[in-house]
Image 1 (cartoon, one colour):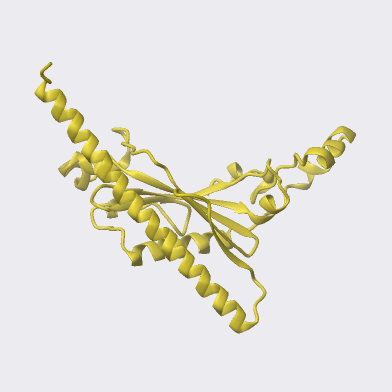
Image 2 (spheres, one colour):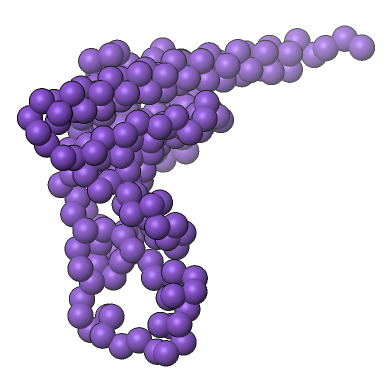
Length: 224
């Protein structure tokens, strides 16, 4: 059987592109892992030197995931193994950088999640985590971020922002800054003043009370 040349070109080129994006994203993720571990070690040294009792911990959770724990919070960095394209209506598709070469819009993603450390310590499986940002990386190792406050949304910098040790360090520091400033708020009194006997019994048995950093124990209510 002879292959259709157009079909062969399409399949081979798309495959090569996705593999290139994957490699660029994996290299970026390993840079995140390395820089985060070094930053946490620096915090540990400084804490000991200054007599500070804050605990800092770095833990690898596999090839595509690692976590850091500090000051009652956990940050989990997770790389998705697939490559994504944006919808035609997405803002990034309208940038001159992508219009010049549509292949630049194919990206891998690195997600950054925030959890309460106690959620893991006390096996509160119903507690909620919160995505504070995700980093998109293309085959040219350019990136942009969708994130909360300190991480921001910077589509217009996609053409100039490159994954480097310096840029990765800045993203990590911004994630820690946002997490540290993102405090656990007590839910409104009227939402928690009543509890049934069954709910109290189940609280002892199954720990169903959901805890998060925003009102009503639900991260989704943080609309910033």
